[in-house]
Image 1 (spheres, rainbow, N blue to C red):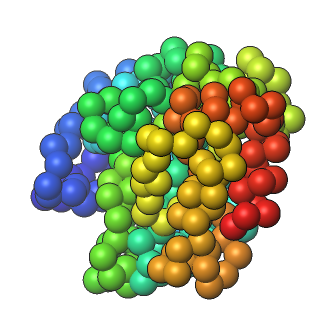
Image 2: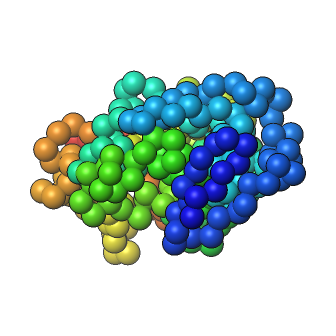
Length: 263
């Protein structure tokens, strides 16, 4: 149903519960940031409604976030609104593309963001609600609703939520953020538009060449967007798979290079 809060009109998803954004609850959220509630973060295409600190907080609250998730959402949204991210195209596409947030640094651990078993699935409040807050804004402020502004055919479960961290404790390599030149203790958000996840199942390979050949094959399947156009892609490896590569002397960069060469 429609919920009107201090002049901001929102349309709640009917199939998931929504936390009522009362003024008292909103005050607790806004206390989690020093930014002016009226500060404009950006306008969300194609409807181009403004996302202010206050409206971002309202959507985070409705999505089931805790107040200390708000700084992360305020950090991620401007990245998604950059021109090269093509939010307008993604909102209206026939494809099922959705934004994925990968968060590195101590803040991810502090708020309980999960990067271990099942991190892309249900059961983890921070992962689920942060991604859902972004999606609610894409629908309510951007108008990216299937059959209206969005021409998506089947969409994807990633259009419910997509926010993870890395399992740094079990990784043999530096984090994604470190590979991009950031300090180990820096709080960093990486955003990328991705299509539906494709599971590459392999519990047999014990050496990297066989393992990476299977992964590269999944990267270039004839039904994937990457087969038709150069596209951004995320390869998420489990700790055991990463350990197979590291044991053979391959660094994070080596694995990236090999996957690109094979694919």
